[in-house]
Image (cartoon, rainbow over all chains, first blue to last red; front, side, top):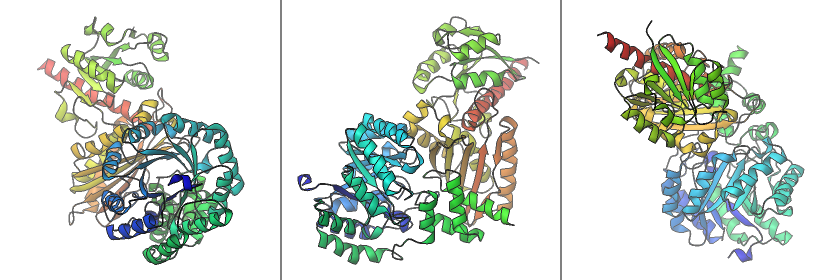
Length: 337
Length: 294
């Protein structure tokens, strides 16, 4: 199967998209989406809470359905596609990883902040032991200079990761920055290189194409941009663009277009667009899943959500620090009065 | 006042910070620092300060066990398994600073009185020492169904041991939120933040109290009282803002600034461990002295 593909796409709507719908996926939705993705011949489908395994929490939002049931559902309808899971050390543990593997997950994406790869070796080693393909997922990539990224990617490689990703969690990177990063990795690591974009500055597609041009072969997308913030590189559009460029994705264009329109669009409470909040995420370099939380906090404290996001960017808050949102909002409100 | 003799096993950052704190204790007399590297900064400092130094580890100490009645083990979980065994045989009380958890979990502000007769107690985790007092503070006035804590620490203050075994933090802390804090269900999350200059340790505690049992005033007061208790041994422990109430949810924002003894001030996560260790040893000592006088 993989011989017929120049790039291997991982569809993240059932994980990253979980943020956009406040982690309310149902088994029925996952069954439909995963089945259609499988029919369209998408190689990997990621399923987990938005913040990875065990992400269901007051900090990030409680899952409506236990993610293990969602993983099991996706596995049950995917005879071609493989199911991937995300795990952020510090949130999820080996325990959940094992549970997911037992249910049939075949790829473990171990995500750390771009400078903190050394919390991942245990999880990568264990995923390997469980027979899973492994990815080192370096989030908030824009927050580290290129040489630091290279150092951290080498660590991921040394732990046994099969692939290392540049993850533009804030949708902040510009195409030339993506080029520089992928190029540096291409020169320094021997494993696959991946790119995960967010469309907050309307650059997800451009960044993805640059990444592919520089040698990234693992690419994330979300159908209908169903991901955090303004979503990710839109999978069905990417498939079409790649086809025009002669890059084989192995994905059936009509089928992915149909499932995006008929199955995924109805899941979205509102169509994904670049709202002023999403734009602010990309502009200020803030973790994309903060968007909905900041909106809620802004309403609660009667302030502008952009002020919260800009302040969070200034304070160099990293992924997962959702508790800072209310904290900062309370402070802004207090200073205003 | 009569003092109880103590020794520190491990001459790394934690051991050395303990050494400085113990120098101020009115009831504990630090006599000995035990390491395995005669050239370590910790042992060199201990010698300078006039303490007995032993550089051949626990077995060296056991040749002169009369040097201390209470031992702080600041080595590693793996080493503690052996240390706890031989120290028990030697009749010593042990404060386990490692994640080994051979003895019961003890949070200095919550449950030390229940464990004064134990020969080995465990300090849980830094996040546990910081947040469990607050879970307990809520639970003692309004029963807590679920408690979740998020500890954010500066990357620089997370050592290789913590990093290599980060699951230990989440799992141990979650369990202790239940066992010591009293929540029916506990969850813990840890985040490392690499910002420079390094951030202070921050902890957020979410608690859900049982339906119909919310008493805001009682919770506010209980939190204020508990904050003072923790501040008595960790002066840099404070609420960042007033607790936020939302239905049956209470959210508490904490910040821990270290005393800056040996470890830098931003390492509130390490400071609260050493401060709690000293506090617990002092309670042990009071109990031992009281028994002697009876």
